[in-house]
Length: 89
Image (cartoon, rainbow, N blue to C red; front, side):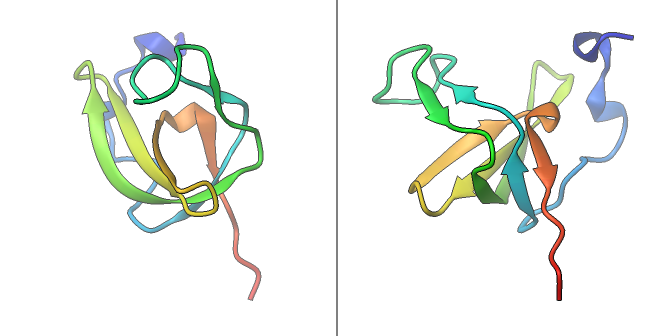
């Protein structure tokens, strides 16, 4: 099954609020980020942030609002764009 055919909302979110996550790939503006042109790079792979909200898109997908503190930006990410950062204590 293709990622776009999967209905993520049939299960729980992959991430929880306040979890530390890392961007897996370049994130470009899809036209929803104000003040930037469509296609502009918003984040490079490897940027770290914290999940600050969980919403939905198209009644199929979870969208994770991630606060990238160093960049001063909150960006909506899909599950395949971020990964959990394991803390070493």
